[in-house]
Amino acid sequence: MASLTNPWLLPLVVLVVAAMATSPNALAARRGGGTNPTAGFEKVELVDGNFRVQSPYNVPESQRFRYRNGVRTFWVYKDDMPFNTATHTNPRTEVKISGHDYSSGVWQFEGYGYVPSGTSGVSVMQIHNQEGAEHSTVLMLHVYDGVLRFYSGAAVEPDIYDRWFRLNVVHDVAASTVAVYVDGQEGFSTSVIPSDSYYFKFGVYMQHHDQSACMESRWTNVTLYTKHYLVF
Image 1 (cartoon, helix red, strand yellow):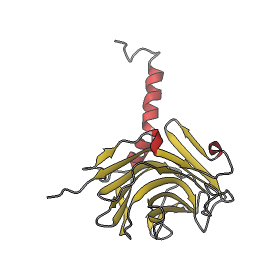
Image 2 (tube, rainbow, N blue to C red):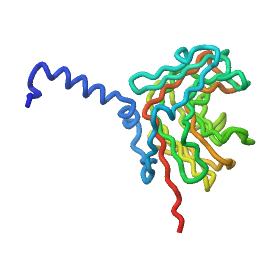
Image 3 (cartoon, one colour):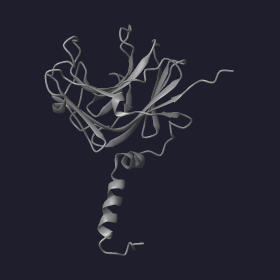
């Protein structure tokens, strides 16, 4: 067995330790110290095909989205086109998690996110209702001037810029409630209007005021969890 006193191994050990210490998970955990929102939940297996990118239809996807070293980077400009010619919605570059729409139980989104300073007037994560529903979403998390908000209202996290954060969003379908955790701390919870089915999205989706010229977010280690009710 090679000894760690070998001078050729020491630089490699230092690099590995430094990489672990600066990973998104480690940086978010350093700020945390709260509860583990995923306790008691079952992890949902996701494959690459579950992550469907939606981006402006008039430019190649590679000009608005990058997936490198496990990190998905999304950006969009305020004068971009919608993601297809049939919609008049605002510009977006997002992932729709497909194949895991749900209509019962308790579901949870977890991801490590990063929003660079200057990004504003944008949704970075949402729980979307089924197509054609009276209301499009039951939850959107917007960023305005460094504050993460529930839509354009209540503040969830006051300082979101330029750091990796762990985001957990829990949706209890039967109770019609959502709860948002940042770095293990519950930042917001509320009742929501129920719909027939739901799915998760994340990335950047321009909103209707205070938009920056360019909007960006980065995500890694995105996972879904679920917990079904016991029937007696």
